[in-house]
Image 1 (cartoon, rainbow, N blue to C red):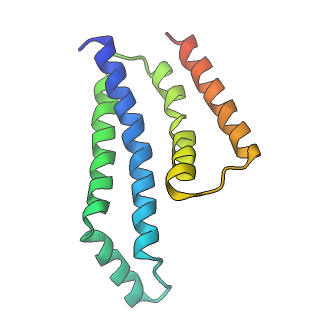
Image 2: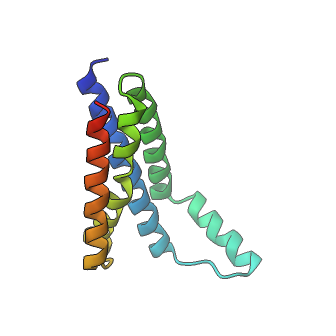
Length: 126
């Protein structure tokens, strides 16, 4: 495997994990919250287990893990872990655009700091 292939696998890993979180959240909002009663909780779980998009989101997590471990063969973990911290900002920005969640200036500043730190730490290990 070339380093470029490993970097592509790593990128797929990050995007698939962030995307799976957005898909899970979308489906959970559409299905609705379960109440505290045992019957309602079991009904909610059973709805999740038969929902095809929940399965797709789970498959995205598996694909992300396979790509992560495949990339780890070629890339140093000291590079991968700081860059992987970008999953949270990617998910927050995705939630802003896809789910209409708020993203105030303070959060944008925090996302910028996370991105700067992740890229800086990742570049130190190359």
